[in-house]
Length: 392
Ligand code: NAD
Ligand code: MG
Image 1: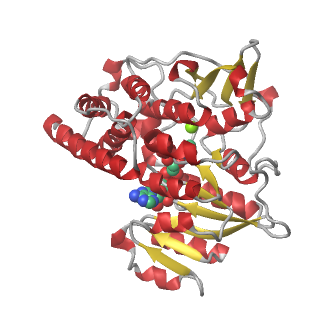
Image 2: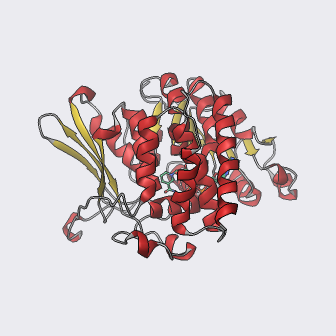
């Protein structure tokens, strides 16, 4: 698959999860390149007012609302004329299956994005994938479906690695240096992390993101999930995917080759850059973001991560090495634990404790189907809830 821009027409884009941090930045990219990108479909979970506003601004043909308690919101009467509304839990998957678009951005948060990603790859449209949980949970099902150039990672590190590997023989890659800002609690011990609050954890030093990934960035679970994501995307063992703390978030990742050469990807900490590239690959269009003046950057610092204090990083490594259904359990338990932390029902270190409890209780199997993953996910959520109640 090469460029997806149709002859004489704009590239048709669907954005699933359009009301979130990635979704709204993707809309900004489409706004800035309105002559080349046409937004044709949008989905949101519950924020129907925002959804309707974007549907009107971009004159889209299809919208989806996935949260059943919002499918009858009165504001949906104000959708533009001729716009078709798809409602219910399967709305995102239905939009993902549509032929009327060229690229689908899956910007849904959590394992809820897996089936939409699967639906895109089952057809011949491009998948611009922000939803890393899709690969963590279902990488064994998704990767065999992806034609060359069909799956473009939006996660900034993976977008960076993808570009470092472009034109290279992947067999000559020695290892990946997956960079990590370190989050708001860099340098703290496990003891010091015991009392941190939701407010402290939501204050990320370099990126402005949705609540779930912001907490994952504070526990370093995000980097653990990203190692598993990279393992699937680039076909490398976890032992060759090293986490490197890069506090300034200016190096988005690096690939080291067998001859000792290291290729790094640098740029502004602005998600619109990788989102846009996932739409335009192999072309490059004008940047939607301010450029970095490297003369003013001062320094770039590097550190090793602390796997003892940031236990989630270690748990993700264990799950990624076991593979099969274990990453599904890691992810589902983490989603439940993060939600409990965000609602003051669980302490910060309790997140790793809940994930560990669920992993210890799970008998790992090979991944065979979406239905199986749905069952394992539901089991892990129920087990995590029970663990949280017992900890209270
Ligand atoms: P967010 O919480 O800001 O937005 C999530 C979006 O998903 C919303 O539009 C919401 O309506 C939708 N959604 C929520 N639950 C849903 C469900 N059950 N079914 C269907 N849709 C649902 O999240 P975000 O920060 O934009 O992150 C989205 C994804 O992108 C995540 O997987 C995250 O890990 C990944 N990502 C985000 C960033 C970032 O900078 N925000 C960077 C890299 C990767
Ligand atoms: Mg990332």
